[in-house]
Amino acid sequence: MTGAAIIGTIVASNIEAIKGYKQAFFFISIFAFFLAASGLFLKSKNNELKTISNSDQPSLP
Image (tube, rainbow, N blue to C red; front, side, top):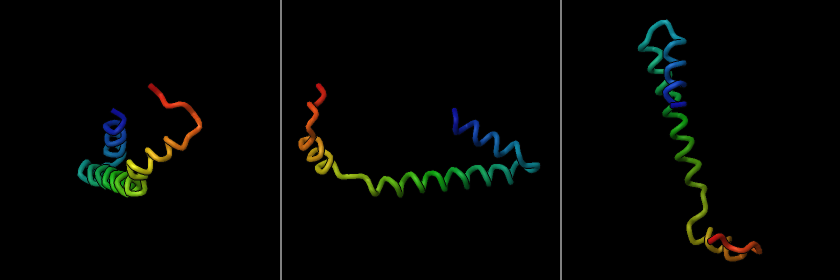
């Protein structure tokens, strides 16, 4: 719902609806690219499991 509100706000802020939709979906594509690019820097599953096993805290059930 938040995404739809952002798109609606961007579209409504422009006089021409087509220009507003272009801006809204450009914003969405930049945001999606940022999320995908940041996902490349996440640890692998094996590294996460090593981190958990080296932790001093007890594991969750």
